[in-house]
Length: 351
Image 1 (tube, one colour):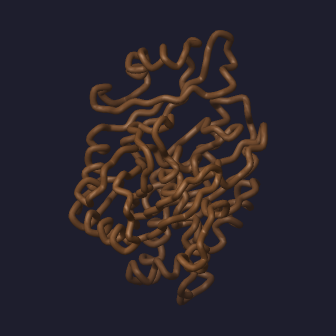
Image 2: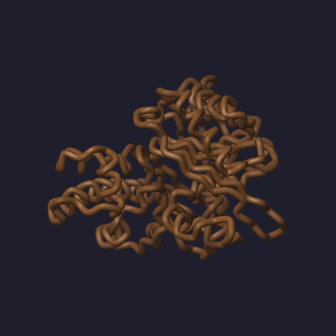
Image 3: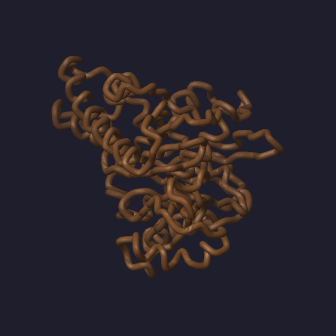
């Protein structure tokens, strides 16, 4: 589901902690990885989704493009957070063309922003509705000023923004090429970034529910810093297991406290999903994002939520030239690429 559309693109995922860039080559049913890079975003350059240091982010993105010799100039980028609204609504049955004409008026009832201040899109959910003569529609609205802020970053970096998508739908894209659709099986895609966590539930391979929550990897880093008086850089290394903490038991308690907060919000999201559908069960959770690398998080969520939890690998079905890519780098950073891979799969005509 793209708010803008075009042809071949490079996927650019601009997060609070880092920028992820992915370039793919699609040939028939074969998808090859052409470029994959990650660069840290300077501290405080983006806070709660708001861009505070545009120049630093542009410089960071330009460095990635140069380092990986990206030739494609058209780009897809993702959005998430408070400036994005996704709602499942029930409407009288109509064709997609009819809905396209009336969506502006329908959206006014559901969007808490001035309708003239947002870009709208929608997707009719397969399977109809539980009510006769009705259909379920996923309504999407993104604030124009946020779109402008982020697309301006791409323009200043020398790219042409031609696709604006939501992180949750990009996650669905990357899932589709790597995992099998099992009828009747509900899969939750949980992308844990630094500042936000994107949660989407797929039903029969299609997004049926999304929610963004304001908790992520930065909460681990902040808690470790506060507990042990570390720098942010050292706390990051401790968080991902690259460096041991001064007191393993105290560290475990700090990490578990944050993991519990994440688990509570995930559970709350699942409760919202169950309240809007007759499908009661979540069968599997796939975690991605930079914070999916937090040691033991998958096992913690598995035990806490009583649901199968795996770390998402959005690169597993891609053709990868071992001479061009370092296997250790890919293994360590693959979960962080989930959104960027999904964005790089965008093309003209997608909805």
